[in-house]
Image (cartoon, rainbow, N blue to C red; front, side, top):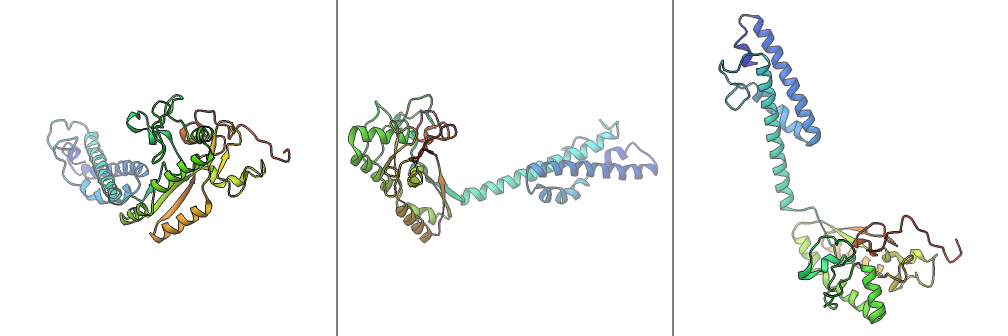
Length: 301
């Protein structure tokens, strides 16, 4: 508006300049409104705080300069104000993001305990690991510390297939021992205490469906019963098995977390027969069938 006033002599220019300024503020407000939708909180940070700054003299940083050079049309001043409004909006957004990032970096709201009660092969790929989420059909699991090691030549692919392989080659007792040792060593009470000491208050714990294996008792009450230690996948029973998670032990974990002022988010991470395609499905690289297949109950239903 300032730039355009230079080329409009006499009283009419005041009305025009005032109207032009209102148009510029209206258009700038629209820009701020759009950015405020994309960047929450920007409206209050940017538009009202910057309204007075929009009335400041135009300078060399603006689209139009306070000289006669390049100020040949009224729209130039309007564009300069709009350009300034957008620049201020982006600056305010950048400051807000920086403040938010600093807050998050100081105290993250939560942490995920992946690789503990739900296994993914690439967590245990050792020095030969190449992918975050395995590709094709080749697994990356070279062991399951602290007891199972040395599988570099025959890496395991997913939790269900690993459990079944241990059953078939080493027996149920050793399979249980391998999993129990891993679960006891991977996360301990000391870890919960350290998480709490950092100011973190939420902990996500992924769980296998076998935590609630007895919910499948209508399929076979003798197999999927309370207290079962290892259960077969109801669809891929000849290829995949799972070590259950004792629910009394799980309740103890919740009580221990509460003592450290931690809230636990229980995440049922995968379903029987696999509900998605990936090592986290428990049956990968077999085809997920949770959504497509059905299993008969012991009553023939």
